[in-house]
Length: 523
Ligand SMILES: Nc1nc2c(ncn2[C@@H]2O[C@H](COP(=O)(O)OP(=O)(O)OP(=O)(O)O)[C@@H](O)[C@H]2O)c(=O)[nH]1
Ligand SMILES: [Mg+2]
Image 1 (cartoon, rainbow, N blue to C red):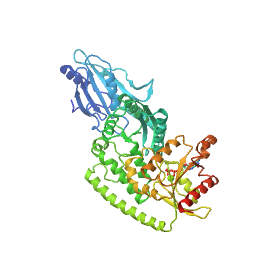
Image 2 (tube, rainbow, N blue to C red):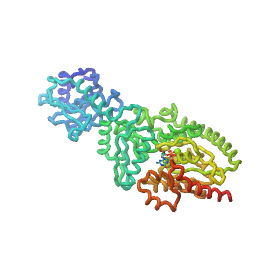
Image 3 (spheres, rainbow, N blue to C red):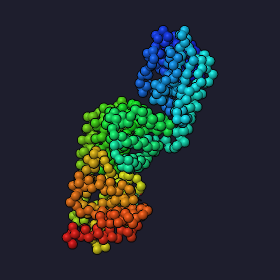
Image 4 (cartoon, protein in one colour):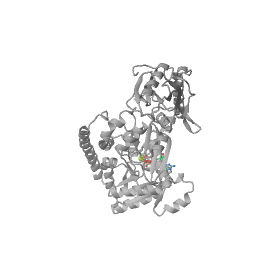
């Protein structure tokens, strides 16, 4: 039977249907055929009287379309209709068609019932049934039906967006946090995705008291997401929490979609943004460190879903590379990084000799640090509405009204749950903050979560042992606040309110910064 081919125009040929029914009848078990679109029979499956189990399909080549390119035709011995389990197979395996062939009491073919996926929900259902037909009497062309379906799926996909180079993602957050906190955190994930040029198709927020340790979400919810992914033509799931390797594998296996977590997304942004030699080395190091404990699971879970974030590791070596080679690479990187860093230290030491005080701009990502540096020093460094626009530290001179000259430095921004790998890798950059004479903590007051962001930054100050350096808080972007009076009242005792885009608003800041620097210089 397995050597036969099925014509593209019928779901199953009449002869083959007869053979299938006879075998099924004799065995008194359901028997199924997985048939490739080419007509080739991929496998013959023997089930029990009441059910059938499909073997893992991931090894079977997909046709590259949105459907798997395989249909399942299997017998039902007791005249049962297409069951919920059958439909699950259709949905999860993205079968072209799921068909049930009734076996009559004489072991002959009865009616053929078929179901297929729909590109768009109809009355809340993602599938539909074809009219029952006797296998000897099939009139509708199967291949026409499938190519029309594929075309419709892809039209629905492209309607949403055209750019095929972009990843198309569904963002998922499962959390025990409060609603508002959960929403804010998810919004940040959306911003991160935007900053990485990932197209966000949909967000899923689920608050629950207990998180499924294997799949994060419940199976039912994950199934729903998978169906959405199919409808929206998503190719990526991004989770807001850190996933361990076996979770990534389970979810990938379950959904057949690429799965990454927040850390990987941030690492990817960094990888795109690093410009300097040091920055690139630091990012590669962080990526390797992240990858190392996850190596064993990458092969099976990720290698067949190639390309894009997560697979786009540092360099050409990514998947086959073994632990030892990564460790070698890490050792070499560490050395190189030491060299680059010490060179920077030497350059800096020279600068220090001139004894110019250092004013370091620090703060949450996107707070406006680079913009402030630009306005203060008439510079033109990159500042944009993206998270982690700045990775490489920049320094500029600034002359205060009282003729004190300082060096202003701008550096990488902070974020909540900054991946530990990055924190480690950027250690040298962040250590440099320890040499500042004045830290200027830039805060985006137009962001409703600015208090949370301040807390994140202050906690990092502690971890980086910066607590003893004088710190001036600057509440930025006041021009974006609709009703500024109340907010100003709330924060004016803590720091200075400015708009980095409007030079005039910076005068009180300059005054205060000058005073504080003067104090540290003993003037
Ligand atoms: N309306 C308004 N927008 C501002 C102000 N300051 C900065 N921005 C905008 O905020 C966005 C982020 O500014 P950046 O200066 O890049 O922020 P950053 O702190 O350097 O951010 P990263 O380098 O990504 O950590 C940009 O689009 C700026 O134009 C301000 O005072 N008012
Ligand atoms: Mg910046």
